[in-house]
Amino acid sequence: MSDQPHPALDQVRTLLRDGSFTPERIGDALVHGLYPRLSAGAQTTFEQLGRGVIFADLRDLAAGHLDTSYIPLALLLRADTTDTPMADALALAELYDPEREFVVVVVHPEQVLVYRLNLL
Image (cartoon, rainbow, N blue to C red; front, side, top):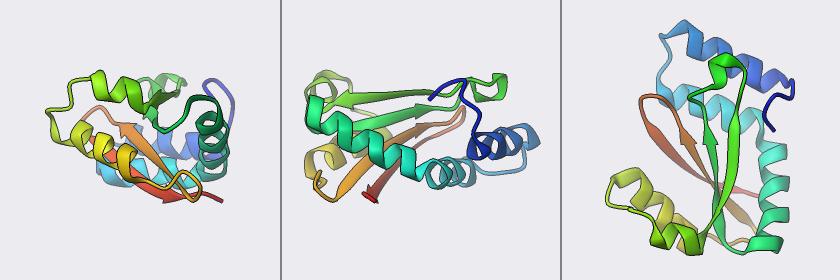
């Protein structure tokens, strides 16, 4: 998904540059703007790797790069999940219904946000 032009990425880049928007507003714009891509990617990757979460790292987006990764549950179980956002991500990864839902973790420079969304 990185380096591909997309109107939602342009909007999120603008919000990041502005500096007056909360991490939640920026995360919401990303998740909702890329929702069809995220939903399709979650379905495909679940079929290949099993239960897990999509990570979207916004820290380099201002420079034009969005890093997205699918992290399988088995790897999350081995990670340090003592901080609240990662503990939330792990809990949702264990609970979501992969036939109907997916989980996205948005890493903003100031905050980590976790979303549980319905598939398209």
